[in-house]
Length: 602
Image (tube, rainbow, N blue to C red; front, side, top):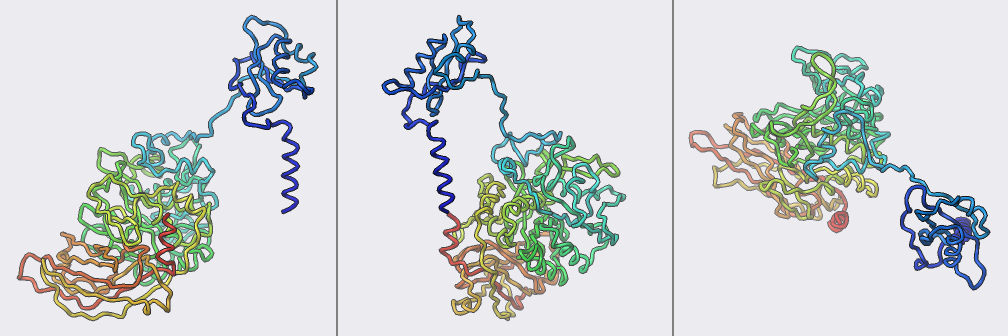
């Protein structure tokens, strides 16, 4: 410490003779007099009784120049300018002047702004990266790039139908170490041509994430300094065991898993990962990425036009995934985007036909050209989120999988583009919408929060016993209500104080599932629509141990009364009544206090 102070002191002593003693010293020189007509001079120290300003004036007159004053705060440095009518040899005159220690004729210096420019021909059309038409409607990433944060050192794997890694936009960033083909059981995830020419999905997602910049080809990836790998698993029959292998494949190489797929978005399916897939997701967040946890980013689904809801998608419902929805270039929910209580955030994608889609790399096989301006759906939103996570991990590689979720929760921006967004404010002060989650992802905010983030405590959980009911579900306007109180003593063993995810597992028998409305109310009064009605869901059995989850109570106190509300909207009495057989409440959270959560939000 002392040595550092001594060095600093010596530096100050060395430099100080060249600096003015006061900011009020004469300083008139603010600009050059014109190309080739100005000289900077440094004068010798003056004798007592004469000021430097007087000496500068005298020197200027002797050599036929005008004194334009001291240069900034540099003591004894003056700017002298040539009169238009003066054609004398100024350099010779200054050389011969005994008071001039140094002089230099000024010339125009070439300097360039350090703004980013790319020669990729489609970059100007990538509105989601830099929207010059609608301010604020982009991911706000260019300032991050200007600080050389581009995803370097991070690998994002696209779990999909393969990636064409020989493509000019992919090959330099391709990671063979993180890749595999589970459909053909070999290391090469190259997509196979098919009859419909649609095995381009994974390549498009990979381009969004890590397309190479400044290669005069197509477009730029959001994390163009990151590595991208591919796991080919969707081009053939998919089993539970294959899915489990995919979720943990090369999980010490791959940091982020981008998954733009899920069960059918038809408004009637209730499905998700099966036992092996669930176990692999859990194992990934425990053991992946050297113990910090694999980051699984999943698309919320494209069944909005069928009234589908991502709470019926077990991947989007999982506490181990980052569920991402979509907004169009106006910041509004597109017709295809699903809503749900487990949505963490949204980012940009396509909208109606009048609006722009996502520009990205494309395969060059069959009818592909290597570039497309037609990537759409939540399939295009999830890779952008994965790319932003890569930027976060570059600046803070030790972020845990839950740190990433927390940072998204804290930094996503509530936007007012949609007056019907149903924004609710929970007991911890977080805004959440079933349409938009906690809001729009913002790369600048994510990265800056990641830089200074203090890791959250370990995940803890509480689980109620299986609560048997065997009660009929009344028709609207009546509601079946069940409550469960969680006391401080119930939470004492785990140390849980505040919530993250809240899950409810139900078994309901019902002759027409589409009529059932299920809501969960947390102790704060924050309500989550966890089981939305879907008009196309004509299932006649109901739900068997299906787990719904919500993030709408994030940061709230865990203790208190939880209320399950179930309503039957059947319009005819000919159908038999539905029955709630049993249910179970599971809380996930941490030992962070309510006050600590509030302090992190500031």
